[in-house]
Amino acid sequence: MMPLSKLIAIVLASLVGAMLFSWAAASPPPKAVAWLAAQLAAREQSDQLEPPGPQPLFLPSYAPAPPLSEEAKINNFAYLYDNAVAAMALSYAGKPERARQIADAIVYAYGHDRAFTDGRLRNAYAAGNPAGFPCRQPAKGAAFVCLPGFYDQRDHKWYEDYYAVSTSTGNLAWAMLALCQVARHTPEPAKYIQAAEGIGDFVLTLRDERGGFVGGYEGWEGQQKKATYKSTEHNIDLIAAYARLAALTGEQKYADASQHAKAFVLTMYDASRGCFYTGTTEDGVTINKEVLPLDTNTWAILALRGDAPDAAKTLAFIEANMAIGGGYDFNTDKDGVWFEGTAQAALAYKQAGKLEKYGQILEFLNKNADQTGAIAAADRDGVSSGFMVSGTSIPWKYGKRAHLGATAWLALAQLGVNPFWDD
Image 1 (spheres, rainbow, N blue to C red):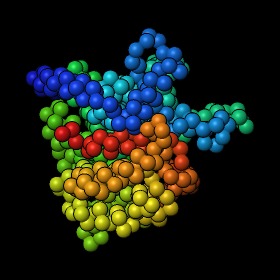
Image 2 (cartoon, rainbow, N blue to C red):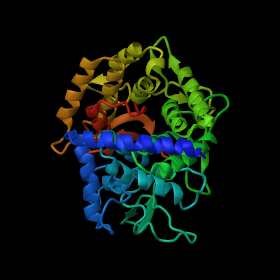
Image 3 (tube, helix red, strand yellow):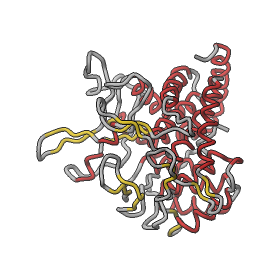
């Protein structure tokens, strides 16, 4: 637990931040930010929440697909990562009340899992108010947060998703980042910091003494297995998440964890190619070179900042291997534009001081957003990631469907904000 003097200092800093944010809110927000805020307002209205006023809310990750379509199976899926990025974008945009709605949902989920009390979160939750019906129904005598799923009309059964019920280390890191960001800009930060600490302490159990943190846990409760691979992306997230948590709490264990993650990330850099590899295979040692993701490289530039080995060379690698049609693909097969990753690339260029290129990419993104400010996950259906959907042999692909995560990153790009750091 943090000392009282530290908490008082955080509260004072939060009050100052709130005043600055109220000034920032006087300016019209970027269209993507306005869309994020509108989704929360629409959800309040459609759910007819009582009592009136801000409620904890998870937003659905995708625009609704027609009922009974295959795509409709994930209509009520609120992916943790997407919601965390949305909360951060709203916070940076000077909308702390809206950011707190999502952060409050994360805090509720942290304290109301149907099986676990060790600080872990799931990869997705049911969209809506996690404290409202039907999530208030008792499980083992207590309220619990609902997980998403779908009802199959053919066999009249309710199904949950293997990935949604699992716990990925990177998603936990983004939840920590969102909670730390919100805590910095609220007069009552304690509950957000405490939840971030609990999540961070759980992730500490995933530390590999050979370097980095492993991938998390997969599967349903009672059958979960530890994911022993190590993701460069997950560890990039943890560099910033633990550093920000250490700054808020003064706890050395979090500062040490940040450095532990950073040391692993740097071992994944190939100086001859200028790229960061995706991570390791399940043995935790062998480098996985099969897929080269865009975000592993853009996020390394954003999170490492001045400690990135050679940002210019990494950006050159991205241009040569992932650039397509004004944007960037998820991987190196160049089968379509991944808009979320393209927004991340824009910010990586800005971080590297390449402002003209940042502006060009941002213009491209704005042209591809719809009139409401939202942007699709990809410029076409079937854009591949190179990975398989967790627990299946189904290729993980992105489609042309308005996406919360992509729009949140577009908002961050429009704001010109590096979300890994609060400065």
